[in-house]
Length: 177
Image: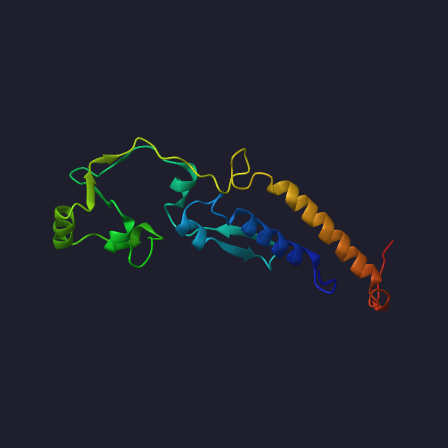
């Protein structure tokens, strides 16, 4: 850590980097698309930050979900193999407005080829993958202990560097009593 820079932004960057490395594994986030979209965000002069997943549907993956029903008069349509889905050619949708519809011709073609699953509901539930949870079985379980050690190490290092620096006694310090 550079003792000439403020401590808080430096330690924030270190903690967010550690959190990213801690959770960014196939064991903690099995979804490749969610894992690859995970990003580090810094706010307020880098004194606060968080990990971000942009997909609107990521919370269903994280928390699990119950039965999904089609809108009245509609159907749920998905491909047996997501690699065959032309709606995903630009990647998974981030916002609900990014969801693409199949053309009538493509729907008929792929349904005849047996590539589609068409249903009125899906369920009953899906498993949850709590990659941001620190409870038992969660992806961040045990991270708090690592952060405490990280902060202690860096704080000690920072204070030692400040005390060793030759600049320490060159600065004017005003004390009011």
